[in-house]
Image (cartoon, rainbow, N blue to C red; front, top):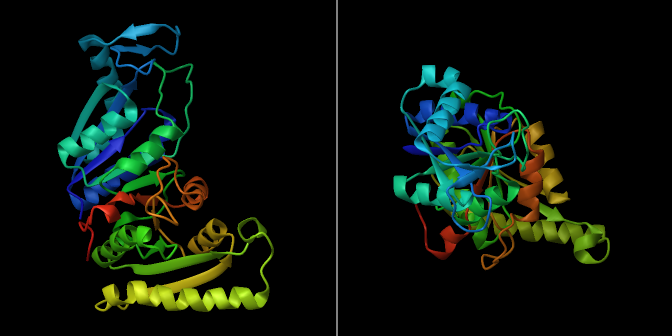
Length: 312
């Protein structure tokens, strides 16, 4: 399913959990793992300088400085590199999200793995690491392949996966996430949980809906979820369709925890495939920040372009 995996790292403890997951995924699929670090430039324009965390001054990029960086990466992931050698370690300078996306296109990457970290200043580090939440969101928006985001230590066994959850808002924008989840479930012989959360909060409707209104929405959702997804699952029987009312991200997280879900797949945007904002959909963002398991964000542009790489 995956032949080229990109692990975008800041080489800080923020990425340790994502590193373990990336190496395990590469080993599981016998894929080429690209460990990639980008020096953020200190201005909006291109620069051959980074900011040294100890001095706060600009540091010129040189072969010697690059060698130190590569040695730091090798030292940080030495334990994993002893177990798996099909690894390419590279670094570059530039706009972080653009360089990651350029790498994805150049190397034919079919899976990106990143930590859900924020911008930090590490006083003990060699340099200022500048992969931020904004970078993660921009990569999620534009990547032409799935992005798996790791926010907590992963304690499951990737070789014995049992459950994957696909969160859907029952729109066309959610179809790429569904197709990815279906293919992933089939290849891993695990159960697919198709989950739709009906938002009944007063913030969305302007008033608290009556029980009759909620039940009507549940019935409508049941009809739609079967109509949308049942035809593509005719050859599968290891799945379940779930509809819950409440705050969608909370219901997703509760269900995932109660059913030992090992991966949550959601489309980058929800509601409309024509949104232009860079930020993740609010439900996806909340799930990413709070989920105990990895979350796969699937780019909604795949729908606009008829992208079908993950059709089962």
